[in-house]
Structures are given as C-alpha cells and as structure tokens.
Length: 370
Ligand SMILES: Cc1ncc(COP(=O)(O)O)c(C=O)c1O
Image 1: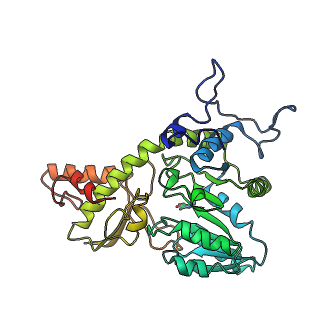
Image 2 (image 1 turned 90 degrees about the horizontal axis):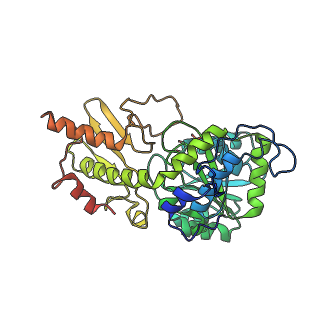
Image 3 (image 1 turned 180 degrees about the vertical axis):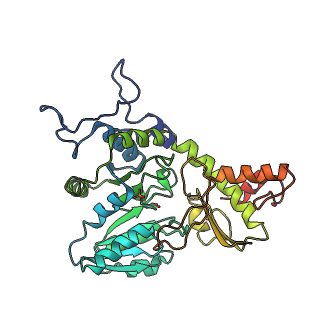
C-alpha cells in the first residue's frame, strides 16, 4: 500500500511507482536479471523483479491493498482458488469468466473441491449458498453477460459464514469499483484487458489488504512459477498510466453505442448496465458502466457484440475457438471504430447497422446513461 491513497485515481495511475531520485529517469528500466547480487532485497527472478514491483505498487494503490503480479489472469485466479483446502467448497458466480468456471469444474471432477454455482444477481440466494463454503468467487460485471452483483451485501453475508471473498474486477477496474472497500478479501485482475489496454500482452494480478493472504499467494506464485515477464510488466505499467483516459473515453463511446443499438429495429435486446431498463442499472448507478454488450438479429443470424477490449480496433470476426465459451462473442471490435464506421457509412449515403437512430445527435443519448 502506498501513501498515495489521498490522491485521485488518475493521479495515482500517472504518478505512483516512479523513481524519485534526482536525475533518475521517470520510468524504471526493464529489469532483465534472473539473479541478483547478494546484499539487496531481491535474490531470484521467480520471487522478485523491480519492474513487476513498480506495476504492483501502482495497481495496489489504485485498489487500496498490496498487489502481486502474475503471468496471466488465469494464473492469478488459480493462485487464489488454490488456497481452498482439499475437500473445501467454493461458491462461484454462475456467470463468471468461463476460464474460472472451467478451473472449478476441473478441480471438482478430480475431487479437489466442491463447487456451488450461484446466480449472484440474487444476493440472498448467493449468501445462503455460502454456508459451509471456504471461498466465494464473485465477478461484477460478469464477462460477457454484464450481470452485476451487490458485492457489499454478498461480501458481508459470506464473511458472516467465515468464507473468504474474492472478486474478479477485470471489467470494472479500480476506477469504477474497489471491491476491497466493499468488503472483499482479495481482488483479481486479468491485466491483459483494461489495465494494460493494448492487446499486446497477457498478465494477471491479485490485490489484498490481508498480509497473511498476501504471503500465501506470494508463495503460490513462486511455487507454481506463474510470474509475468519483465517486458510485459513494463508494458502493463505503461498501459496503466493511461487507464483513466482510455476507460472514460470508452465509457462515453459504449453509452452511445448502447443507445444506438437499443433504438435499432434489428436489435432485440441490449445489455448495458448504464441503460435505465437494464437489470443491473440500479447497481451500475453506483458506478459501473464501462462496457457494452448487445444481442440482435442480422441477415446472417444471431450476433453478439462485446466491448471488453484494449485500445486496438480489430474489425474481424473472432473465431469461436473454445467450445466451453458461452455465450460466444462473434464480433469483437473497438467501440470507437464501430461508431466511426457507422458515421462514415452514413456520410457515404449507405447508412449502417449502428447509424444514429436516437432522438438527436448521438451524444445526446449519453444523457440517459448513468
Ligand atoms: C473477467 C476475466 N477474468 C479473467 C480472465 C483470464 O485472464 P487471462 O486471459 O489474462 O488469463 C479473463 C480473460 O478474458 C476475463 O475476461
């Protein structure tokens, strides 16, 4: 935990973890050593790396705890789930990321743990399921369905049963939601997504204010070797520096896309927590609406658009490589690119599936988005 907590998140993102010595570069060099000379704190590269530590200090400050970087989001998720004792029980949000659910299904099939899948949009049912569980795994908003959970209520209920509360905060990011302040014990990130933001690396992270849990997770990371590369950590830190600018711009675009899609006759349903009729709207009003997802019909059948991504803007259909993914995001593209393309098509007289069909200039739609 740094001493930056009184600062605004955008300031922390820009400033924390920078060298302060007179004459030092404002960015740390990438540390490429596997071994460190005796006499300092670092010894071996599977346990220590100054480049990870700079990343960790920034994300830790943003989330309000102490951070450990991992080689991927799944490595971070595995480390937390591995803390459940053999024969223990995990309550898992039924809509959570498919890799998390597959990890749990695999561990359950091997008799390692018992798993209870619950609909975490129903806080009472989720809390009731925590009786006798060691860990509750929450994700809000979920990827890809954008279901929201009342984290504070479920965390309080789960802790009353003695369960540890983990929250995958990948989609919300600490700029929109800080689960540790809502009662969670540990926060998990796929740094691969928003935090790094440019689709050029895989990385993960955990953040906790519980020192004992931190040391258990540090030990898991070292024993499994699920560490990030230092180049990835450096790039992720550079991405984190611009998270506020990227996220708030994407939110504005997502809100506009949601309005355009909601008004389009070919679209049957839009899931976007910022829209007043979305089931997650009440919770989203507390500050979670950075992504957009829609379902609709086109001439080629059902398509879904999912706005969980970096700053790049691919316009390609993404192949459905993983049979376990459901529902499947068929078309992933940058939200900005989608709006720009629609505007271009309209300017060219061809119209388009996302053309401005709302009550006026597209940006007016944002007035109805929380
Ligand atoms: C919400 C969420 N959590 C975890 C992961 C896994 O992260 P990674 O792909 O970095 O292992 C993902 C990946 O898409 C995700 O969307």
